[in-house]
Length: 219
Image 1 (cartoon, one colour):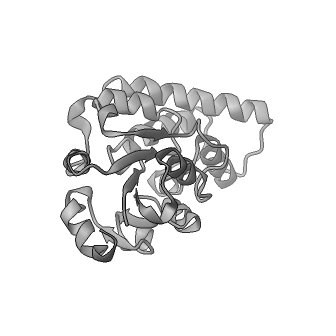
Image 2 (tube, rainbow, N blue to C red; image 1 turned 120 degrees about the vertical axis):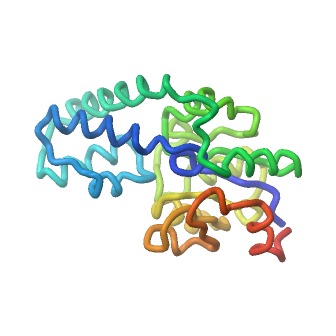
Image 3 (tube, rainbow, N blue to C red; image 1 turned 30 degrees about the vertical axis):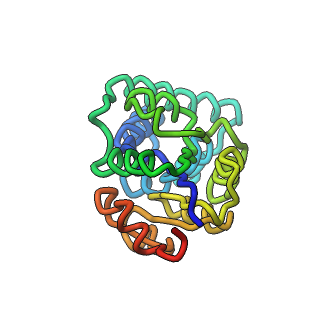
């Protein structure tokens, strides 16, 4: 039986993707690196350090590890500064409604995000009351597509993976959910999250009614 839901943050609860893009773009411009929206798509769902390494590989750049860390920190500072402008109006359409419905029906809810700034984002959204457990980039060392963040969240919820549904918008996020033995709901296009158990184009379509209808034998 499904007793818990684990949500990714970026692209599911709110869309900070544009803020991430702008921060990476600013850093890349300063470093005279090539960076565009196509490359940015490859960063979806992965950690900050993995992201900068993708950008460096694309540009055939090698740097000392401390320099890489410093640059990743600089990007994060740019991103965090932009979060101050987020408000409770910045939920993706349908996200707040789904979280509210899950609360009403008594499901356990966790966050399972690679972001180390997840708490700040949730606070800006006034979303903390919707979550029983926060799993973020500070909770585990291995990021998606490893299942560690979802396993961490499930353990804190005291639920086995097969009692939980993971809601994700990234290919690597769905990979992680499958690797961990979770049920999965993908948000986004077929070519990105079509391997999820259930897929919606947008969060607005991902109502609890639709999810229950698909996983009818698990509710």
